[in-house]
Length: 103
Length: 168
Image: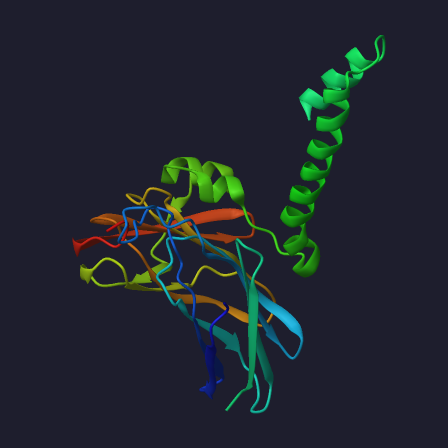
C-alpha cells in the first residue's frame, strides 16, 4: 500500500535543504467515490526527520495536507555525506521510510 | 467498559445466564484486540499525535488545546504563500520563524473543517522552517503560530481560493 518516497538533500551556503515526497492518498473522509460512498479517512499523522540517526524534526500532520505530500525542511550546517532519514506513519498504522546522503 | 463493570456487580449475587457467559468473553476479547491495534503504532515509533488539537473545529479551539490561546502578532513569523490559489487542493505554504529560540511551528487554516493542518517540532540542528502543501476548502486566513521560549507568536495571511480542495 505504501507507495514510493523520493528525497533530495542538498547543502548550500551552510544550510542543508531536505525535500521529500511521499506517496499517500491523504483522504479527508469527506470525499465521495463514484458510487456516492464516502471514502474513509486515511492520512499520514507523523513525519520524522533524522540526521545521522538523531531526530531533528517531529511533525504531526492532518488530512488537510495535500495528497502525495511534499515537505521541505532545513538543517543548520551539515556536511556532504550526512545520512538523512525520513519516516512516516498514517492513521492505519502503515509506515514507510527513505534515506539519502547529503549532496 | 462500563457495561462490563455492571455485569460483574450483578454477577456477584446471582449466577449469570448462559447468554451473558457467552457474550462477555467475546466482548472482552474484542476490546483487547481493538486496544492492541490502537496502541501498536505508538509502541512501534513512540509517535505522538494531538488528537484533540487536530479534531478541533475552530482555530481558536485548536490554539487553546495547543496552549497558545493568545499569541502575540509578530513580523518575525514569515509566511510565503500565494494570495490567490487557483487549485485549493494543493496550496504551497512556506514558513520561516525568525523569532530566536523557536522550537515549534503550528499551521492552521481558519476556514477548513479541521483548521490545524500541522505542528512541527524542531530540535537541535534543524532550522525553524517548513514548506508544505495544504488543502484549502475555501478562501481562508492561514494562521502560523511559532513557539519560542514558552511564548507564542502569530502571523496570518489570507489566501483566496477559486476551486476548493476538500470534498468534491
